[in-house]
Image (tube, rainbow, N blue to C red; front, top):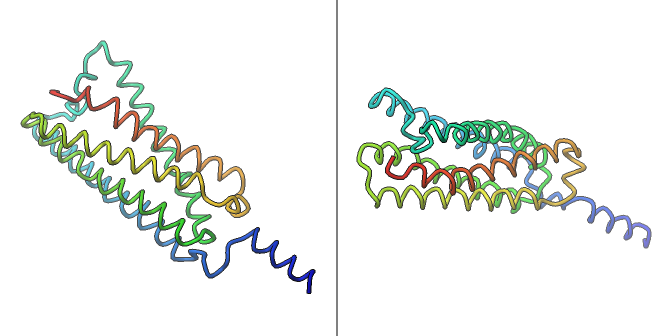
Amino acid sequence: MAAKSTQDQEDGVCQPLLGDSAGRRGTYLVLVVYCGLGAILMADYVWGLAALVSRYHTAMGLWGNMQKPSLDWLRYTYYASMGLAACGYFPALAHMLVVAPSLPKNVVDRICTFFAIFFFTELFWLPMCVAYLGNPNPTLFTFIWLQLACSGLSAIAWAYSVLTIPSSSVEVSGRALQLAGFAGTVYFTFHCAVMDGILWPPMFHHA
């Protein structure tokens, strides 16, 4: 009996209780948030860019002062950062799809809630930018800045939740995928919180 009790304790340490694991629900929730809301946000971006091109024959107004030749280096750095963030999104998604079923429900819920908040708040960014370029005013710019702050903070909360998932997930995803997923999560968050939330707003102001 003592040996069995010890084994049960070891099993309890190594893996979450089956009743607490997210299972397929976790996978579906990740797909809905990461892919479903992500696709809606991409459609929002397409609409916004199309609206700008239709009105001004270009979407370069989004870059504000970064359009200046003297700041080309900064805009190109921004392009590179956008590319890295986009590339990092896919290993972050792959990692979550693998580990979500074995994670506790509350962990998956927390991760997906913060990321859903990020996507929801981001939906307002481009429509507000389109409106601001048509009629620059301090009130609308303040709302844009607040939206970016909310998106950045929710991205940070999302990343923290991902980076602090139970260590047992390493056994499920493998070390390589975990590191790639964490790296992608960190850089995606850096771009959204720092590049978008801090660097971009003053460049766009009174564009």
